[in-house]
Image 1 (cartoon, rainbow, N blue to C red):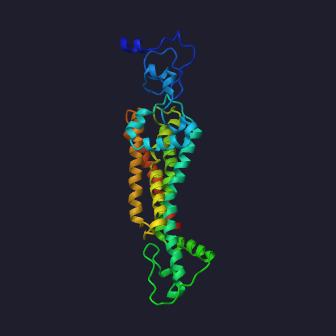
Image 2 (cartoon, rainbow, N blue to C red):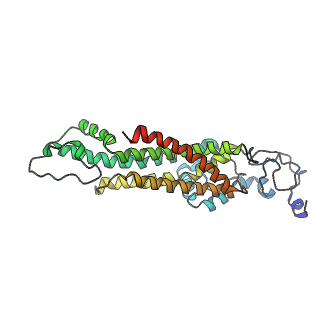
Image 3 (cartoon, rainbow, N blue to C red):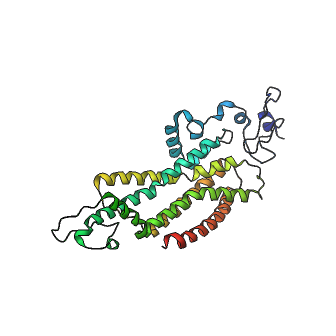
Length: 314
C-alpha cells in the first residue's frame, strides 16, 4: 500500500457510523484504499464521508420543493451527457419513486409525438368530410396530409354534426398507415428503456460487478432515454402553432420515422456509454453497453415484426 493511499484514508476512530459503498453497499470501515473490494468501484474518501456532497444541485430526484424547475433543469442537463454524469455521483442518494416519476413524465411528453400528427390528420379528415356532400366523393379519396380538395362547383358546403366528424376522425387510424407506424415506433421507444434494463440485468449476472444495485443501472437507463420528451415538446408546440396558422402538415412517412427512431436509439446508447464511463466508472463501458444494446435490439426487432404483421399492415 503506498503512502498516498494511506494518508487519504479516513480516521476511523473519529467516525462512529458505518460507511457503505454507494454501488453495492459493502461496509468500507477499516479500509485505507479508495476502492471497494466487493464491486471494484473507485472513490475519494473525502467525498464519500462528506454529507454535504450528497445533494445534487438540480437533479429532479433531490428537489421535491421545486418539481417543475428541477424536472426541466434535469431534462436540459442530460443534453450534455459527459457534463451531467460527471456532476452525478453514486454517493448522492437515489430516490426510486421520484426517478420513476421522472421516467413516467418523460413518457407522457413523448406521447405528444403521436397526438400531434393524429390531430393534423384528423383535422384534415374533418374538413374533407364537411366538403364530401358537395364533391360527391368517398372518404378514401382524401389525402389526410395534403390540402383540402377545392370545391369545383358553387354548391354550398353541407355541414355535418360533430358526432359524424368524430367518427371520421377515428377512421383516420384505418386509412393512415404512416400514423399507425408512428404509434408503433413510439410504443417501442417507451418500452425500450425497460428492455434495456432487463438486458443489462441479465448481462450483469456474468460480470464481476454483479452486486451493483439495480437503482444505479436504472439511473443510467432513464436519464439516457429521456430525449424523447424533447421531441414530444417540440411536436406539441407545432400542433399548437397549427391551430393558429393552419398550415398544411402531413404525417411523416414510415421511412422517415424509422430514421428518427434509429437516431434516437444511437443517442440513447451513446448517453449510456457516457453514464457507465463516468458514473459507474466501468473499465470496459463501451463493450458492456454494446452487448446490452445487441440483446435489446434483437428483442425489439421481434416485437416490431409482431406489430408489423398485426397492426401496421391492416
